[in-house]
Image (cartoon, rainbow, N blue to C red; front, side, top):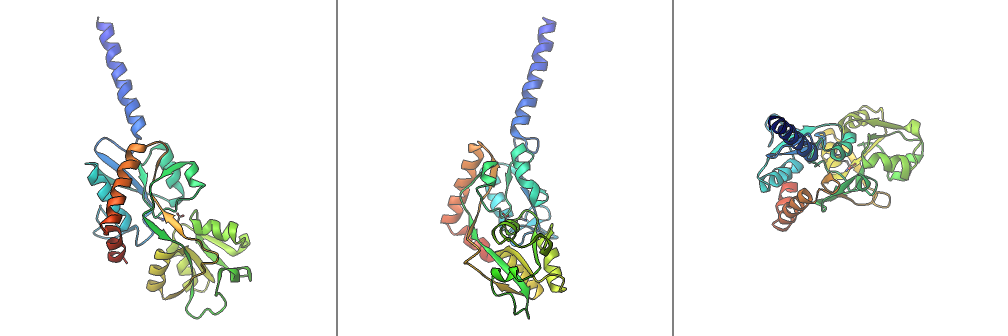
Amino acid sequence: MKKKLVKLVSLSAAAVMAAAALAGCGSSDDTLVMGTNAAFPPFEYTTSEGLVDEFDGIDVAIALKIAESMDKTLVIEDMEFDGLIASVKTGKIDMAVAGMTATEERAQSVDFSDTYFVASQVILVAQDNEDILSAADFLNDKTVGVVLGYTGDSIVTETLGVAEDKITRANRAIDVVQDVKNGKLDAVVVDSATGKALAEKNDLKVVEDPSVFDTEEYAIAVQKGNTELLDAINAVLAEMKENGEIDALAEQYN
Ligand code: ARG
């Protein structure tokens, strides 16, 4: 009898551990863990008084609504952008909300929600730069900064085929923006809303080139097969799109 009891106890401990593993180590029943890279205003950035701890931005506001709809507390894990997909995959975070473009390549590793924002890439150059009027001008021996692992990185590298020794890859957009300001780099390629915000702050010029830069759709990434969370996310996104809340956030954080 006693032996049986011990066995029962250890079995249920195993069950608890299995459940915890299934739910992912980052989350418990009452928290929803959002992974992001908070160097991407207006979608996510840090500030002295953020919506959640030091974090603020459009994505933080959306994620709060999602957590609220599920009766959970939102927890934010700030990490390198390049590590987000792996963290979703392994369950370290429940969802990546990071102005993330839903690409086919990423969709092989994670499931994406419906689109909540449409963007594209832009080029940032110094105000007095007269040589870069389109992306094709990069191929004229120009130096270009991108952020490691962003879609802008793969477009400059793969689509445009800029030579490796002309590309500088930083961990944050602001680092390569500084280089353009200081004259160390000719241009930066980054997402439009972030690029426009950075250009304004740093007195740079924005060059658009829709012939090369397609539209990109931002979506939230969850672990493959996590339909419960995906459905909850899509329900909130649908409501926020319909009642104009997403537009209002874009306006507010502009
Ligand atoms: N949209 C781009 C991409 O998906 C850049 C996203 C950067 N986001 C961030 N939170 N740092 O690659």
